[in-house]
Length: 162
Image 1 (cartoon, one colour):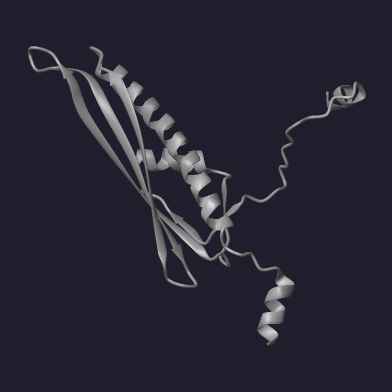
Image 2 (cartoon, one colour; image 1 turned 180 degrees about the vertical axis):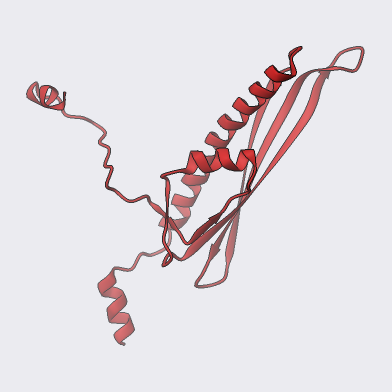
């Protein structure tokens, strides 16, 4: 297919490079063993790389809050307001310092007469929220890790020799 397109002068604007390494390299990422933790881990898959020589470790916790809203005369809620908060701490190995990042995502869902439908809808909203929060976390980590000077191997050898 690409041969046909290149024959007509088409040049792709975006190119994917499957052999390129992720921009985020960490010694470890602590993720909660919960359903939302698994959704977040799935959304982060392939976006970071485990490397024992890396200088950072990430700890993540996830909070989910469900509030009943739009109560009718009998006091039964017609909607649920869902709030997801990802609290992350980026630990720097060399200095022992850490930075905290909190990201919040809100969703709302109408309640149905079926508990199974409500559960399915809530799981789908959780999955979407974790994907959104993963995007924001990756952008912030990329920004934070790009601020640190990266030493080339030759530079490190020269500094070690001095």
